[in-house]
Length: 119
Image 1 (spheres, rainbow, N blue to C red):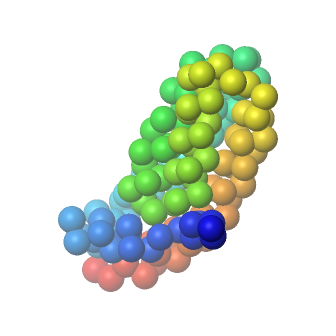
Image 2: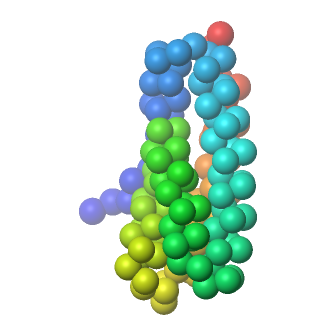
Image 3: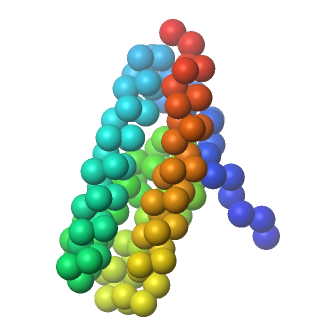
């Protein structure tokens, strides 16, 4: 079975159809701001050993990454949230590192999608 694509540009087109080009661009901007904030919060929660705070930090990332088309982030945030809630710590540092890397990989696609959304 193959891995899902990192980014689904169809999600941005869906946002465009739901609102407008400006709405789609605003959602991309909002996602990027939220992602950076929540990743930093997640990193602090993990360092403190606070698994509930970690789950709370990645939950909105799971939701928003699904809506924006960041598939790898959605999958990773989902796994981190589930494992955190179960108290399964062992793989969390690696998964959080992977989530941060997935965000870094999707940022150029989001920037490109933002520029290409026609008014």
